[in-house]
Length: 109
Ligand SMILES: [Zn+2]
Image (tube, rainbow, N blue to C red; front, side, top):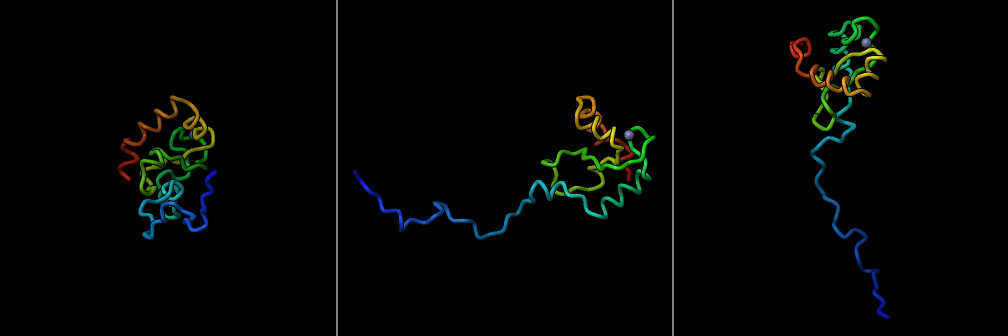
């Protein structure tokens, strides 16, 4: 039986890099800054950008977080609760979001 003494081995086989990470985390990518939120409200005027009927209470990502570096107002839609759920949970909803990403009213603001 061979007993290997590991007491002199480093805990990490590969040392932790000393440089800071240069890519934002998924959470950072998806974060909506106060100024972006304000710009979104200004664009929607507080009304759901899909149904144009209900009060907009959700900021929905139209660009998938992993594609983003940072979230801008162009990556978001201001939606009511119902529309947000529809967008995130149905196939038609996802298609709607994809189409919205290139829509003129989003890009012109
Ligand atoms: Zn709505």
